[in-house]
Image (tube, rainbow, N blue to C red; front, side, top):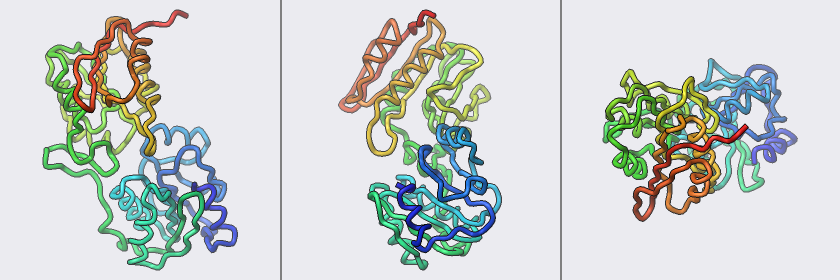
Length: 330
């Protein structure tokens, strides 16, 4: 991890931060140790709300997008190759000094290192803990301009962006759920983990809907949703789907919950979304949900709702309709 490689680079490895000025740190995991960077000079750049909130809780300066120029930058590589390259391009364009790249082998750091070596002089790398850290000095602003990318309109007519879930088009599970939604869904609907807005666009076609709340932790995905869902009844919330609080209880929740952090499937994320849906709903409220067939959500659904039915499935996905959330006695 970064916190095992950065000290080696700074302690005799040849890496030195400039003596003054802000240091941008792009997309670090919320649990990383950044002791090698003076906290008062670090600015965390993160568009994933739980990580953003965690860094703020640690008293770091945090921003959703870069603000101005930086004396140096550190990029923590994400898994998506296009997103990683775009982050490097942004760091190089905004840094007046060193740009440090860090990542795990499983996240493609070796491919990034090879590609960058073909263009510029690369220092390092420091290799440890199944990853690499390396850096370039004072990159030209346009050196990696062709790596830059952002939201774009797909052939299907939707705006998506690198790193956003289902960036290449409509997710098959969401399409399956959209086809199963009832004609009437109540006045207040929440799309929990809304992504770039596909389900919300379908919900707004249902009779009697007065408001759809799109709750999404990925800021870029939410900005894509704003372009895809222009109906004035849509309300956009950059928030953690597991603890978001509406002003009033919701009639219906729809969701295709996330189940990955990194590469491993973690069903507890989806289970937390089920618990959140039950908390958000009115006593007679409804949940419409799609999930991968192998994920164990039935027990959590039955713990949280009086009525639970599997309403459809195929070889990969299963659909649930749950109603009447169970209120815990105080």
